[in-house]
Image 1 (spheres, rainbow over the protein chains, first blue to last red):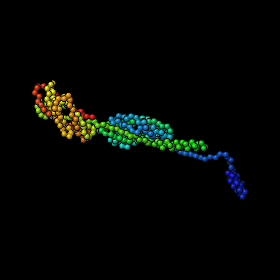
Image 2 (tube, chains in turn purple, blue):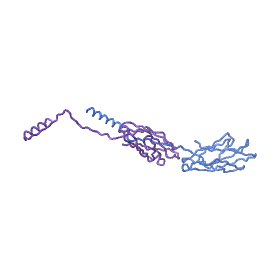
Image 3 (tube, rainbow over the protein chains, first blue to last red):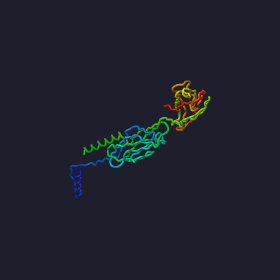
Image 4 (tube, chains in turn orange, green):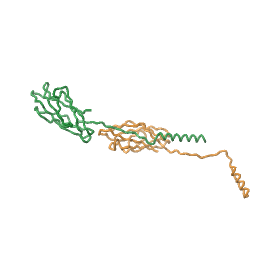
Length: 150
Length: 159
């Protein structure tokens, strides 16, 4: 600030022109800082395995939670099956989410939406149900993935 | 200001740490199983055979399984393989053509409280399809005393 005052005085002396330099004295200073946290959600399925009744009755409820860092809008859920059904696409099953979803989805498993509360693990659950009983003996397996976005 | 920056940094660290623990997707293994099971597809046989020596086909016994392979069965005959009429008895043998690998005439040489024969039979080559085969009764003795002689032989699937 002092350098500016001296330069102004020098210009006034050499040119003879009237020139005013206004310096507002202040005892504060500022730096603008900003950061952005993108909307994000996580999902956590409590169980690692679920037994799907072969007679096409509903499974026991499979609990899961989702946590988002925002409130009020909705998070989108996507269900995907590695096989398109149990063992193979020949044995499709439904997924029925307990709260806030669009109800029964069919293979290929589709999407739903859930209301979020910021930084709160919201409990939910789903049940699985074969669309038809499996009539041939054997063991059938699948991997079901629940994804949440954003 | 300094405190505000510290708080912001702390919040970012928390978010970063929680993101490292959780994920935007999670998976669960889905399993189901169907046990081997078989059922008979033919009705009970009620047959009358002539009281003479020799073989008589009395009907078919068929079954269906939900798998391809072999079915284990028991053939149980209370009293042994004898047609009885009160104290009078004549011996018979019984054969089911689906017995694998060879269909044998089964019999008990002497009266017994009960006798059970273990049998094996090939299933159909397609799950839940049925196979059926004739049952033959071979009468070994001719009854000489008047009356109706009877016996019940029961097929069951062994566990």
